[in-house]
Length: 191
Image 1 (cartoon, helix red, strand yellow):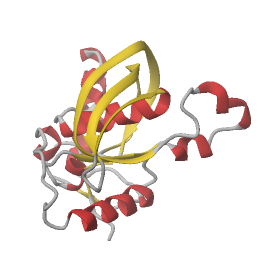
Image 2 (image 1 turned 120 degrees about the vertical axis):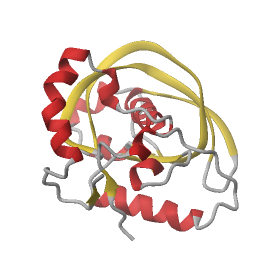
Image 3 (image 1 turned 135 degrees about the horizontal axis):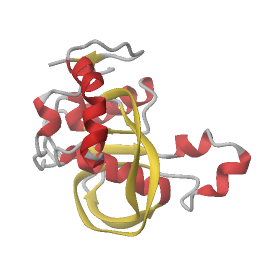
């Protein structure tokens, strides 16, 4: 089932997600619905707060980015062909490497893309959908998507990294999004 994406301005996007247990009600169905929702809205990552669930759950499919790169761009990122992974109760252990810039967007903040600096590598501890624990280091574009989604479960948004002047310039667009004055080709909920 396709779930509505929560728009910028909703309190759940600023709420630190709660850890969940393996018996979280309807977890497998939620994961299935989130994959379906993410693909339907052409996303490469989706966090539970974006579908109005204040829990520590997100998913990443960076393989889509690599599938859409031109042949001359395939060597641009060190993590090809990307990853497809569910992250439950994730805890970032470290983020390191050279910071690099990339134009990020967010399904909850449609029609806005901004250059954001993030480190090139992240080491993260997480449970998969079977609640098997992993500690892994990711780099490149996969690390960037993971860091973006991890921010969501921490109540943080990519626009928080912008300089105050840049955020001020975006204020009217952000206000319009929070009021539902935005047209997208996927389901959204406002307020």
